[in-house]
Length: 143
Image (cartoon, rainbow, N blue to C red; front, side, top):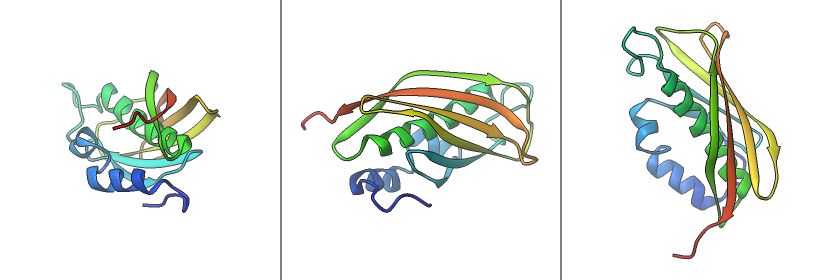
């Protein structure tokens, strides 16, 4: 996985240990590149479909929210956390097989908020959905 050299070591440890979280692992999401401004991940369609055999809309959202939340946590920095406060998705094309790739790009990064757009594409590069997430950034509570 590619990530910035100055990434918070505690965040790296949590990502490596958890694989991005239980749901992320169950869905087969693989992080390829992580950063505050840009992140990339893939996910198989198989195992993440809805009843008529196409990639579930909720799977698009999980993929997008996973990338946007990690990118926001990277931006927040050491001793801080990112918590999602809004997410939405527009699905524009269906896919029934293969691997999808999501690319997360920062829209706005400030001290208290981070907003990202995540575009999910099929193996031919066609846009399947657009996810937008806003995270609030806060100091990590004392243990």
